[in-house]
Each structure stands twice: as C-alpha cells, then as structure tokens.
Image 1: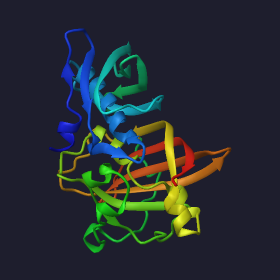
Image 2 (image 1 turned 120 degrees about the horizontal axis):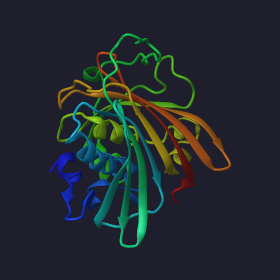
Image 3 (image 1 turned 90 degrees about the horizontal axis):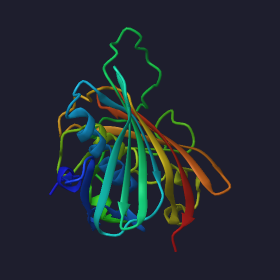
Length: 271
C-alpha cells in the first residue's frame, strides 16, 4: 500500500459524496495525522472540480479539526460555493456517524502566468539530501512516521531563527507529489515548539494537536518525480495561553518554494 491507497475515495450514489477508510497506518500519538485528513478533504474537492475544469489548481486549503475520528469509514461531502471564470471556491465536510470530524475551504484558480513573480522567501542553507542521514522511523511516535523517508538536518539549521526545525522528506513508498502530498508534508515533522525547549526529555514529551491549518500552494504543478525529496521547514511563531502558532515552508531540492503553511494548535504533555 502507498499514500494513494490511504487517500482512495469511493463515490457514493448521492451527488458530491464520498467514502474513505481510516486505518492505523496514519495514527500518531492520539489519533490520525491531521495532514492525512486534510489530504482526504482536498482529494474530494479536486475530484469534484478538476474532473470538469482541469485548468484549475488548488491554491489555498484551510482545515478546521473538530473531533478525533476512530478507525473505519468516514463520509466526505463537497459543495461548490462559487464557480468563477478563473477562481473556484469549494467546501468539504468529513463526518463519522453523527460527528463532524473536520471541514475545509478550498480555493482553486487557473494559472496567472509569471509576469509578477518575485523571490518572497529564502530557502534555508542546509546540506543536500545525499549528505543527510536517514532517520529510523521507529524512533518517533506512531505509525504515521513509518510512511516517510526522512533525513535529519543539523539542528539548528545554519542561519535559522530560534524555534526552527527542518528535514528532507519523501513518502515511502514514493508517490507523485501533488497538492495533497504537500499538505501532508506541512503537518508531519515533530512540533517546532520543541526546538525552544532545552530539556530533551521535556521536549520529547511536548506535543501539539492542530485546531486549524492553512496551506498555500505556491505553484500549479510541483514538477517533481516521486523519488524527489522536499525540504520541510517549520518555525515556532509563538505560544500564548496554551495555543501554538507554527509557520511552515516546503521547498524542492533545486530551491523552488512549493507551499507555505500556518497552523494553530493546542499544546499538551505526553506522560
């Protein structure tokens, strides 16, 4: 099995409705990885929109996580909020029984060209993937970590701000990199908050549960092969009243910014 199997959708007889199955392959700490749920919602919207308008690409995904699901089937319903000439706004809701698990707003847009392109972010200076060692997934919590090949980047990365964590990542087994994979990458490194905690034992016990995450897809097509590795960078912005704000970037190995993200999460300690 690979990520495409884990995010497979079955169309239901009702319009705009799908079924998916959650397994423990993506469980981490207390439940399924939020990036997987985000990817499932995005896949459903893409199936609805791009099947008839392939010129539109995901540009923004905002997900609110309302309840923790159990293993088993979930239902996803989609809706087109506005179908414009160059921009389409859509929604998706995932339920399990009578509980709403998560919900998303998705913006898709046609290519606007490169006339106004500029370098608005700077990639961290880190060793290339070949010079970084592959981490043993058994050293981290949950089955979700076993779905990745992750390479360790020296901490703190050269020139990085305090509270920054980074790593080279690709799915294992490799699959084509699309918007759903990029959204998944934005939520699959250990919390950057740990980089601010001096006590290693306390840092390892520190976890976060995402309440809301937004991903901005910076390119219509990442243009990567399945085995290409991406640099994922997470920065701890602040913790106020038990809520952690974290900002992320996903880069190709040749220095192209593929996605940026921002999320707000509850902080808790694992015993």
